[in-house]
Image 1 (tube, helix red, strand yellow):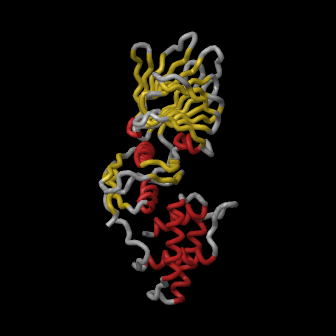
Image 2: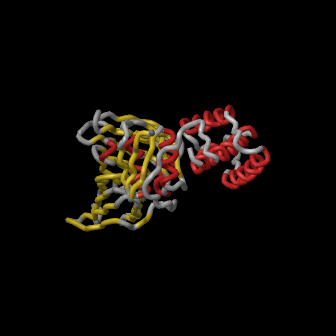
Length: 337
């Protein structure tokens, strides 16, 4: 664990944004620090280093109300950890092997208006690439935000009775203009979602083998194509359709940003399987993730807002006991040595 990882983990821990796995790592790390004291630095020098590091940590970690805070013992342990690690003393874990090209450290939201738009047979087709999104305004005033690696198709002009959209790949957020005379229908995979005036998110990446419809406001009806029956979603409810088992699962989400955070360039994972984690990282940073480790299936919970690619990979690799390297625009996950 290097000093950059210390700063990231302590900041997330103090803000209360650590996942349970990350919090357990920090707390176990503190306990190990308390059991190992350095004898390589004189007391006066150690005090001076502790004061400097505590000042730096205070500058980076502003206490917030109603979140977990470190007590004095933990502050001392955290500062002592930075000094000891700087001196080359390791007692918790050997540092992950890091080689390769340093990634772009930009933390800005996904770039806008980087897409391929064509008109074919009366339909508008828009395709986005990794790390780019597209804001679309339809002729009825409805708006669509298309995530990276996505494709949408819709008619140049809606009919007199319906407004039909096809999300052929990827993810999109829909804010539907009210028109009681024209149903608004989004076809994605094996599901058709119908709304009159509402806002909802649909995620249908082929690699994830599922389609998720999440309602932010209003009310929608979701039909499974070629089958009878439908389900109604109310705000803060979502429906997940498994393309393998053909099963439907209805559940709730706590905050809209869990569903729509990607619009601001955030990564929000809630018990997310490996495939969903990879999709999020690739679309956020415009990279390709290759898993060369023997850990192929795992889940992760955590959120990232302004972290750069290296910070995100540091935290995830630490939580999952993995190592990684970055070469050009590819991230390689590897077993930890």
